Amino acid sequence: MQCIYRTNNSYDAIFTILQGELENKGIKFFVKNEYVSVTMDYICCPEIWVENNDLKQAILCVEYIQNININMQPWICNSCGIEIEKQFKVCWKCGESNEKFYINL
Ligand SMILES: [Zn+2]
Image (cartoon, rainbow, N blue to C red; front, side, top):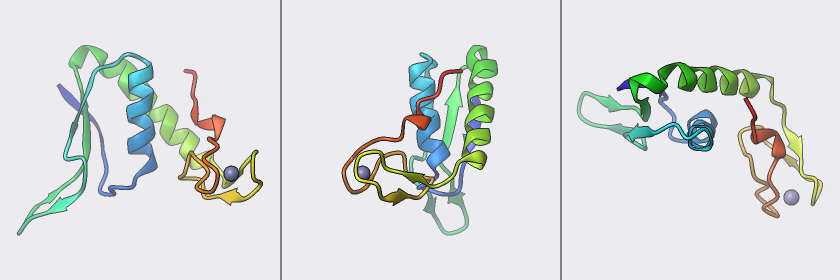
């Protein structure tokens, strides 16, 4: 197995989106340390691991999502019209989702 993504932020949007995307693609993955935890001298960072034979496709997902995330802007909710920060995929006020997050590779 190989680690394809590691973050030091429990609220990293890419970490969440990536899991959904891997699921959609039918790529089996394993999450290590779902949340950041700090022990005496070591920080456990959330990580996503995949099987070696899924590695190539999984890395394509990571690159694609990172690219989208960089280009993404705050968005306006279609349903209630308020502006939502780019890292949220669902409107915090009415629950409407931003369809830009549904990615077709
Ligand atoms: Zn809304």
